[in-house]
Length: 542
Image (cartoon, rainbow, N blue to C red; front, side, top):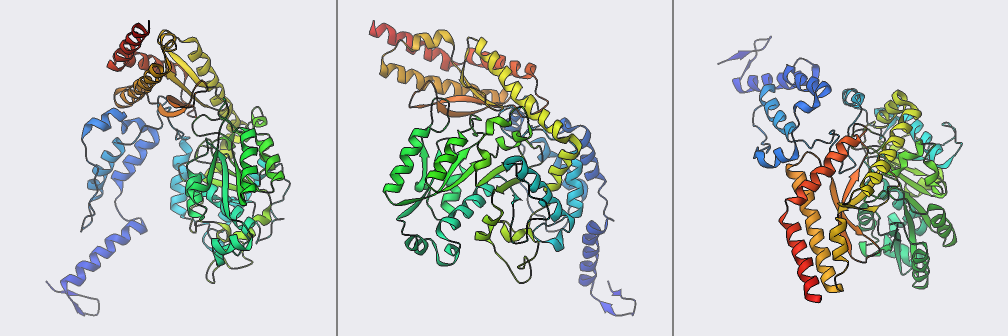
């Protein structure tokens, strides 16, 4: 077949086909493509999210493959939507009020709408030229949280372009890395990025560097120690007390030892909302030690930072205003979609130690946010936070925080009345831990000799692991599990972990989860074997 252009120039059928394909591709950008099937899915997600989602158990046994093969030629929208519906069906039901095992929760419905709007505008806040007023919006939101954290009084126009109160990023991991990057460069000098770590250490007369945090420190700190050249071995974990908070006496001993060994302390990291238990370290005392030892004090408040919005509970964070830097995750208890964190710096001059520029972008003297960030291109996630603050207000956000904490306290009180469970940490925020440990079983277990008792506790760990996995795979609810010290024992034990951030979760959902765990345990061979072992050991020692 022969095709002709308007001036009768002959072109090949292959070229014409390529032109046809090109026009179809362009249709996806100019709005001419038929996206009816996708629109139907979007509408369903907006109004009937549960339609697509099944339980984790259904995902585990369905055998449905979601492997994606890139087609040589375009699929129809309907064909892609068939794949997409299968993918959505296998999504984790994080919206569910019974899904209480992790920090990822339900979102307000307007977040879905905001996501669509932000995708449509596709702003890139690395530079003012690609974001315009969204750059100003991010500065405004950062300024708000800086005031919330530090009780500062910086006006939005008082921060010069080469300074910064902080920035948004993809999450707590990058926020922690950003803070420790600043700390490293302030300890060793901003030229460490030019001369390298070894020469900078020599110039500062240190034998090595260390980061000090409690055993409850987030795993992202190991990544930061690796990336910054400090080494994961030099992330020093200080033991915790019986309440899972950093042991201040042990922290002081650690700092003194490091100083005697000529190891510079890059930073002391306080945890404000531990991932496993939700506890908050004694920030005031840590800040005093940081001042005494003249080192950077960083607070990882990725989980707890949102609670500063609560007038009722912000006093728990006393001392955070003394931190040199703070991490807060917006995609946790600020209820925005995944991929939103913040790092704040008490001193706006701190970022001068990490400034980077280029001729075509983030030039010196510009207001481009990318000058002080690890990430280059970033979406305008600050608009998501702005939407929640505007539509819910500070009072509404505070209510969400207060309700979640009260819910955790109510669950802890309820668990304390049950003879089948043992509360293993008191809820500081809205995270608590407990384990299946019936009073009668524990009374007998505690009569065992040390060796037999250790074996029985190992078997109890396996039983709790089995309960959690069985409920995850076949049950109505989902709790996670972790290992923490229980009853001042050196050995960490398996416990259930509950995160009560979902505003839709009610006590009725939680009691149903507990009832189900009791039922699973009663049908477990692990419980039978544990009881048999205890009775056999008691008879043997009699």
